[in-house]
Image 1 (cartoon, rainbow, N blue to C red):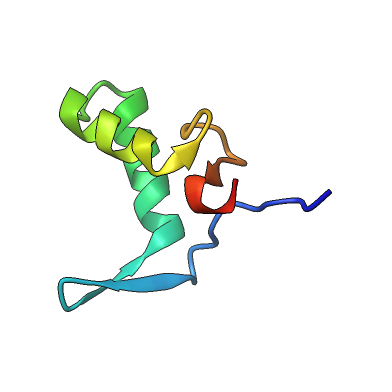
Image 2: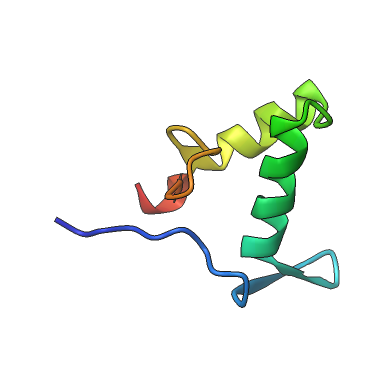
Length: 65
């Protein structure tokens, strides 16, 4: 059984010409969601990227599930 891990803050991807730190972005998004500051359409968008509960500390990206 392969164990998946959440992206680390040092991992990054290029999006529309910008470098985005995946772990830091997810952490900020979780914080906004938990405080009720993340719009519902953003919640649905982020949820589509993960398999299961994206707010969990060990969330697994859907592509790895």
